[in-house]
Image 1 (cartoon, rainbow over the protein chains, first blue to last red):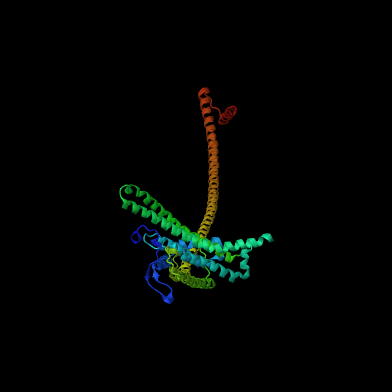
Image 2 (image 1 turned 135 degrees about the vertical axis):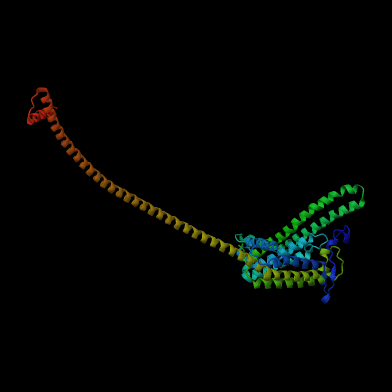
Length: 253
Length: 203
């Protein structure tokens, strides 16, 4: 990272094409972002597909990991949506694992963080809301829009409430995408800034040698925090996805 | 307990459709935005990269979803289910075996109690029989002994009376001899005998 842009904390988000690809005037180049998306899929597949390939009754390490993740996500899904929610289990699982693995791979020094780009998190968020809308309307028809009409509200208040519900529904994908994007972006910038301080202080020499360990310690603490955030944001994303999908399953208030 | 996802083709199809649609719409939008040519300085907001990112994201997430929903998750679910089945089967077997063992122990115990009871009966019978036999023997021996005793007593009595007879005869002879020595006259045998009788009667 340091080699790429010195102390510039933004350059780590730069997308650099690896294999240029420009069909129909669209820039579809295979970039470093695409590479890390592929690595994310490969890493998740390694755990889940290769890990479970032994089908051992007494699991090995990788299979144990696969089973733990499976049961973790399954309990999250059933906890929020009940047994019926297992319809969405593969979807929630894929989302959770993609976001988690992308966040974790982003913690490798020099790596690209797929989820630090708003377009990626927004795509996921709109995919979730799209599934909610399509499934909700397919399953419940016009009853789905009962979601926006809270029961037990006096008539004169109802238009106001419907407006609020509608705004809250529309703001869901925005908050969902911005939360993940903002966390990943800010964390990586902070890490880079403190890492840059160390380099700058050491380059300055003199008193810099004395002060340099302070931002280094902070960078170490931030790294630990970022690992926590990487997991937590993936989990929050999965939980909120479940909560929103629950509306598609049970639109009544 | 693992809960296996019921494969919902409808959801998968809907998801795929939405993904494809959103990719197309956003890609078009991105393309439209980049047209003015304003150079974005902040990479995450650089719209020229949106189309490529969405394109590769759709592919990679599609592959991941396909792999997870068709290969990995059913397989892990099956493994977990199988394990749960194995465990419950083993537990059932263990419970059955335990029940069988308990039954066997009960049977053994009842057999033991029966045997003990039988043994007591046999011992009692043997004791009774022994006591009866020894009683009989004792009775026989006692009868024999009392018969012998009676015979002996009879012998003793007859011997004694015979001896007494002899003693009386001897006494009268001695009396005759003493009287003859003292008086010089010898009393007749009948006199002596009367005298002896009188003396014996006096004690």
